Amino acid sequence: MSDRVFIEDLRIQTVIGVYDWEREITQTVSLDLEMDFDIRPAAASDHIDDTLDYKAVAKRLIAFVEGSEFQLVEALAERCAGIVLDEFPVSRVRLKLSKPGAVRGSSAVGVIIERGNPAA
Image 1 (cartoon, rainbow, N blue to C red):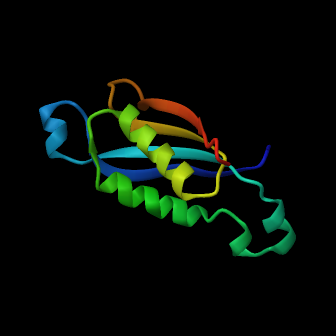
Image 2 (tube, helix red, strand yellow):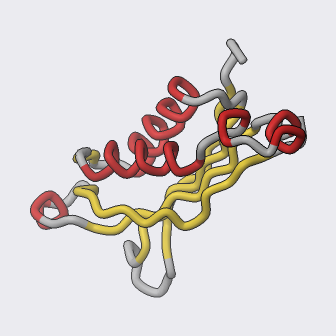
């Protein structure tokens, strides 16, 4: 499939990090998602019920990330990808999770993962 629905630079405040001071504050993480989804039915019908509701995806991830307290971006990224695959009709997700300002001299650090749903 070559169709993808994307969300870019979804900024969310959360507790993340391994250092004691990081456990006492919230920091911004940024999510970029590409979700494989066949848009042809929505294109033909022009109806919201036939597409992937990216607002619902964003709201679900915001609620999850804001309530989480992970130490590693790797763990947070894996859980976010799992939520998208388990709760939304996508066959594959590419997720980039960035932690802006985590390393002096860089704009951000993070991980990029791709996960598929074998049931889709």
